[in-house]
Amino acid sequence: MADKAVLAYSGGLDTSVAVKWIRERYGLDVVTFTVDIGNVPDMEAIRQKALNSGAVDAVVADAREEFITDFVFPSLKADAVYEGEYSLATAIGRPLIAKLLVQVARDKGAVAVAHGCTGKGNDQVRLDVGVGTLAPELRIIAPAREWGLTREELINYANENSIPVPVTKKSPYSIDENLWGRSIETGVLEDPWSEPPADVYLWTKDPSEAPDTPAYVEVEFEGGIPVALDGARLSGVKLVETLHAIAGEHGVGRVDHVENRLVGIKSREIYEAPAATVLLKAHAALQHLVMTKDQLRFKAHVAGTYSDIIYNGLWFGGLRRNLAAFVDSTQEFVTGTVRVKLFKGNCTVVGRKSPFSLYDFGLATYDKGDTFNQSDSPGFIRLWGLPNRIQARAQADAGK
Image (cartoon, rainbow, N blue to C red; front, side):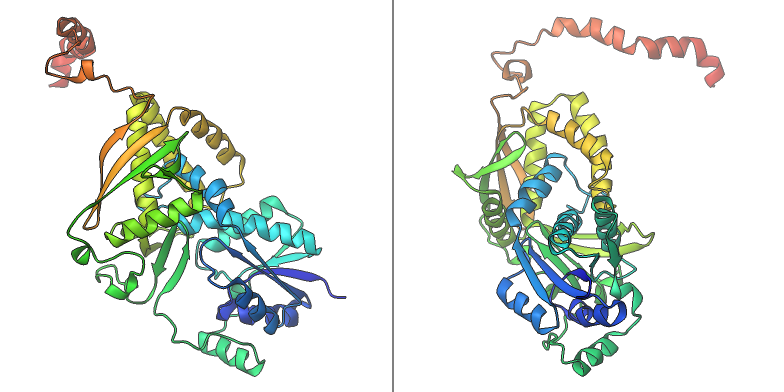
């Protein structure tokens, strides 16, 4: 009996061809693994397709709840947005895939895992590093980095070996999607001067064609985690799916970004992330209500590092665990409700409340009920400006 390799299988051209190619090149039987994190409409069909492509076994798994609970919501609590634009949908899915690949490989007694990533993108790094951290004993095979075949040659290889491959017209774009967002690249998008064509977008309505009446959504958080919409408690998956539909209908969640890839090149990316856009904005607004200025500023620094860790494929490293402990400690009082207005592509926070709010009406108001003692201000200002006045006197001539 031949040794086995577990292949992360999407059912597309590359991974379908990889089943036989791995057998021929490395003499390994291939077990395919397909995981649904919001991107697999028919699990049984893809399982059967893998078997028809020559796999000795085909494993499928629904990991949507685990994806949202253990990966998406921790990144939300950390305010993780890469370069201020990308909510990290594809990036945050890769460590879960790596984890499950390792589990299946060990369950099946495999000696290797394989994936369909090319040698030019970020995902090869995320999967290779994730698997290498969790199971350094496993060999990693990446056929698309090795075979050097054109798309036409891959199709010919598939036809010659009776491998079922997609027969529909190929999309001009490279697309990846899951519950947290959709990533689109290549084709005409490779020209950063060109406006994205309308067919790029699938989840969000053109803001100019969105409803003329705004929608209001109330998002309830407990300990930094969204738990309800408009008073109805929902599972993580259901909450994200529901908000995705509402926000997308109002054109919310489109991002056009030139980002810095981990492999050292700039890439123009289009993202659709309706639910992520709303939840990230609502979460940030609630934090500003219950956290001090110093907490918020330091957490913003942590958020940048946390985002880089996710983007760069280092989820299972020690630093991410350290930062996650800090993030969790900041979320103790991030409980409350945020009201969001969705209108013509815009997501605007218009209300927030919390039992742990630091907002004191008596101190903030300029009307009746003002409890702020304005006579304290002159002494405070003198002390606050003292270093500047001392410096001005001592260094005025030198400064000129």
